[in-house]
Image (cartoon, rainbow, N blue to C red):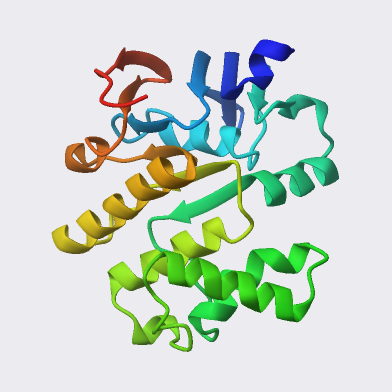
Length: 235
């Protein structure tokens, strides 16, 4: 599928439901969406609209009930669980609202964690982690544990961890939701720089209109349906 391979993400009539006891709860109702390589997309909508579900499908954390889902040239429905886990480790970088850092590990060790799934030596993992931390402006905080860092610094560690495996796509779920205004601005500026200078494709879920304004375009989800595409400010 040449056209799909040229895109970072292509969703074709993707549907997803969950079971609550005997009840089937539809979450995504036939989503079709193309995301170009190098784009920075903000995904907005009320709680329960399916934003995080859509993000998890794109990231290969969850599976769609039906429809086609191509990411970085791979149709995710064609992969078994082991293949999907390997693809995810090579292709996706994750950034979460609450950082998800290991409190007993220092920044360098936290960033190196995704590399344990690779065949890299300990020295190579260390060098890559240090390079990623330098990129996010934390060269002087590598030996600090999360408890010794501010919220903004912890989120930058999380961004470095997302970058360390050089992923094709970065998915961010409310990356500024737990930060003060200044720290949020720093994190958004960093994401913009990664998109602009490194060409990383970014899909970001957010409730914050100010955060969404950092993206090239805004997509709204309403009851599992794409309802509006905001005006583009970039590629």
